[in-house]
Image 1 (cartoon, helix red, strand yellow):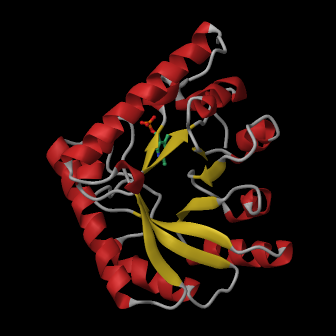
Image 2: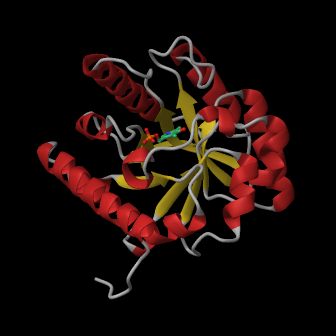
Length: 245
Ligand SMILES: *Cc1c(COP(=O)(O)O)cnc(C)c1O
């Protein structure tokens, strides 16, 4: 593939990336799906640009970032031509820093945030693709909208012209059993199908973003079209306490 030789840390990322690719191909085959149906997003929060570049050299096309300040500090050092997703909780007052600087925001979780994204996108002359983040089965989690709140949110967003909902994103409860996660994925898929059938103006259900390092095979079995994998590609991260929003 390439004759370039990499420092040990970069090589480790490349090896892990290739092994995640293999797992993903296997999961797709097992589910009777084409591996082209599932996009692999490498979650690169806290990861240095040189390591992200190594994964991109090995074939990674999409990255996900969680923290606005960290993302902005790395942005100019990232490889050109990759698709950048913002996947972290986004406060309305940070929207201006993100709109136009990423290809998709996966964490739409309120009407207030939708209005802020719409307003700033209009000012910058862009239409921002987003996913609505749903909260299913994770009662304690503060991010994501409940099943009951989802349609009202989408109906509000349908009125806005500079933001376009392309699908759903879900984070299952942490440290849950496999059975429970599977149920969350399956319920999210059903929601995706139900919303799609409603044919709401300006709302399309093309992307179902679910599955992380520990559960992406399950998510693929339940119909995911986009998996967000951090640790399994880039290794473990420093603890949350050291990170800032
Ligand atoms: C950090 C993060 C991931 C990746 O998690 P891993 O377990 O490291 O694969 C995926 N999605 C979101 C929203 C995240 O914040």
